[in-house]
Length: 173
Image (cartoon, rainbow, N blue to C red):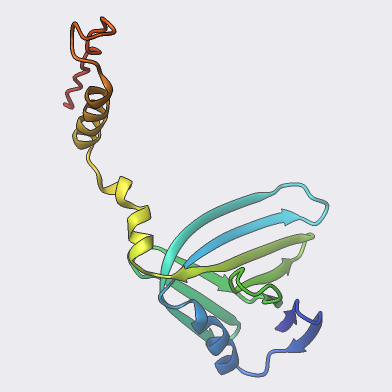
């Protein structure tokens, strides 16, 4: 496997599996954005999938071919597996932008596959706060919306003559 560094635009051959493990260990316990895509070299038949997750561990093995498996720390059924990549590009030229790598592979029939991984930062309190809306129940959400509406409503018969807006009630079955 070739390693292509974007800083200085230089290419090296992978020295050892331990070197690859050391490079990839930067992602462990970090939130990672990934995109896995494949396309025909002529630009047709393209597909792509994207997601973010916190990396729990990374397993690198080399038996008949190189295999890299990246495990989700919070979902044991979710992982990304990269089989026999031809090259790895390391994006490290822009400080503060986050460390990123992409694995490139080709197959017979002019098909290219790519797995791009970008470090989004350590798992921490601010990341859990982003997901707070995901943890609220629908009834709690409607209560919150009702409180906002009622806080901004004028009392009935007030100076503007406006009445309180109607309250919506949603019942989940």
